[in-house]
Length: 187
Length: 79
Image (cartoon, rainbow over all chains, first blue to last red; front, side):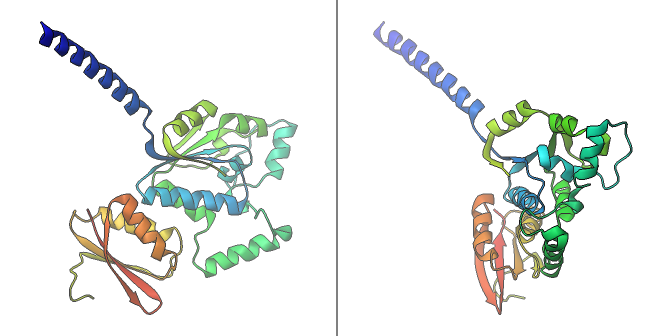
C-alpha cells in the first residue's frame, strides 16, 4: 500500500515535469534573427543586410520587417503607374525609387557624399546594397513589408521588387517572429 | 598546397570584405562531408576574429591557421 501510494505520487510528479518541459519547449527561442528595418538610409540598410546575410552564414534563420522609410528601399526602379491620390503621388515622387536611390544618413552633401561612398565601396570590393539584396534572396532571408506603411505612403504591392520570399504583414506577424527569435534588432 | 593537411576544396576569398568571406565559407562547408577539410585564403583582417566566431557558432572546427604574407589561410573541418 505504501509503495503504491509512493508510485502514484511519483507518477504525478513526472507528469507535472512533462507539462513544464512541454511549456519550455514551446517558448524556447529558435536560432533566428528578427529585424525591423525602419530606416531607408543607405548606410543603415547596408548594415541590416550585412547582419542578415552574416546571420544566415552563422546558421540562423532570418526574418526582416520593412516599415516606414525602409519600405521605399524595396520599390521597383520603375514602378507601374497606378491610380494614386495627391499624397500618394507626392510620396511616390519624393521617396527613393528603390535601393539604388537611397542616400547616406550622414555626409550625403546633396548626393556627392553618397556617390563618393559608392565609388569607394566598389574600389574596396564591398558589395552594393542591390547586390546584398540579391544575396539575401539567394540565402533565403525572409522579408515582410509593413502593410500599414505601404498604405500610408500610397504604395501598392505591384510597386515592390520581385523578391522570392516576400510577404506583407502587420505588427502581429513581427511580434510572433520576434517572440520566437533568439535575436531581435531594430535598424 | 599543403603537405600535411589534405583538403577537399580550396577557396580564394582574397579581396572580399565582410560579410562575403563567411557567407562563402558557410556555403562551401555544407558541400563537403562531415570530417572533410576545406581551406580558405582571406585578406580581410576581420576574418581573424570572424572565422573562429563563425566556426564556434556553426559547430565546425578550425584546425589550423596559417599566415601567408598579408593573407590568412584557415583549415576548417566540417563536424
